[in-house]
Length: 614
Image (cartoon, rainbow, N blue to C red; front, side, top):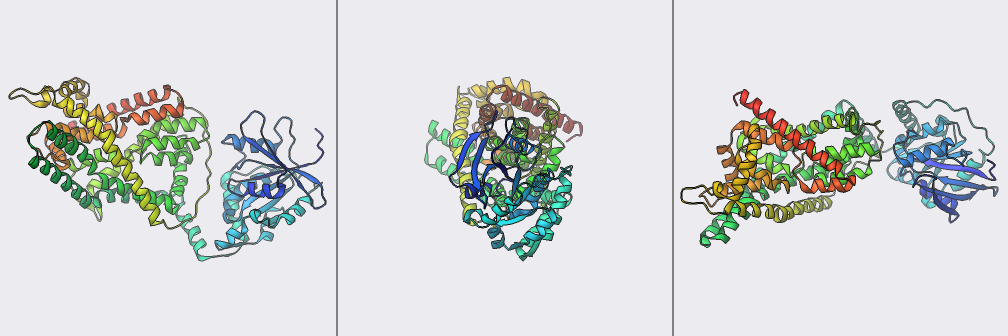
């Protein structure tokens, strides 16, 4: 194919400033279309050399590797390799590097340089790098890479003339012999050495951040630190929340006593005391635990540690066929599986994405926290097992770990069977370390607290009120238990036949059905059941814990915890999975396998506990 003018491709990592440089070089002389066969935008424009020669400039999609993991990266590979039908390989490359993230961007730059095409490096955004305390030596960088390196500030049109001149000097230069591209690990080591050699000066803050990354991202030390942080979080959830939870508990008890003292017996008083205060109130008192959990998550996000945790998890997740790209959606699922499943849209590989959707409900969402808290408070003594280590917090930590291990094992099985396929790589920009803004934290905590309270006032209230109606009618005869006589009691007796082999009593059987609306409804359901079945009008969350401790055996309680590690029990999650997969096939598969795991592991837990004489 004969070409009338030179073709130059603009390549580099995402967020390197390529588009700004492309716009500065071409101005309004641009045309936009799609590459043949894919819905990836093709931006081409005309620039001119210092001698007035027209040059066609193509802005390639941001990429991390020539081993593609997305349609964008596939396009970049095909263009620079000359593999697109009807298009020839570029005559030259401009590789754009973010000066502030030079080490990371040099990893992909080395892979592009191995192609042997005449190349010039645009060291972009040098002003921002210098503002952050980093001054680089372009000459040293040029010597190490063997190609011209031009400092640029695209948005201010600085360095453009020098870039055009360097590009003109490549006109007619023969392509170098392509050399085998070294592996990713070797390129990372080389990039670190090249970047260190090119640094003229660096502030103490930047050096501190670099030292932090060497520790926090260390493949051996980093995971230990991450585990320690998570362990501390779950200790804090119990230890720090206790006084606030006790205050809320006292407020609910006071309201219950106030209603009882000022209202005569009747249907309205029963609804308020048994459905609202005993049911919904028993869930609301766990707001402090949820706020503390979210506070730690928000702090990790705001400081920049969350992205580094994703890198740490990438190594472990690669063993089960996933990548670090799945970590952020799965971590979001600790709050709620719904945004976690929606966040899988960022995963390019369809089988990685499907696997992540299918295992997201195994992450221990905040809705499970009230369930865990009630059972732990009822059966696990509040005692220390070491300096600053509470037994209740340790058990909570182990439940979260159980969910993570379960998700990883299921992912491994899925990637070897129904979602079989090659694993994808994972590279992402690491944000700068920074102190979290108190205002932003306060807004984030308020939003999440409001979501929880809104669920308590809508979904949980409706499910609890419906259960109360089923528990209250028909009325029991003289000497007969109200629960035994009620519609809910009869439904619970029918379900009890199925769950009795795994140690569940009828109370649990009755609570499982309304808990399909939201997991924490299990707690409000138990509160309502025991309020209806009790002569004590003051059936608060503390009384629910006492009732559970009195009526359940330890094997039953452990089996109940095991059930909630795996059971889906959230209609909203199932609906979102249906929308994201555009099919009922995978949500149905998800529900079936999760209920099967819940039943099997609850049974194993119960039978083992009984065999051990617990």
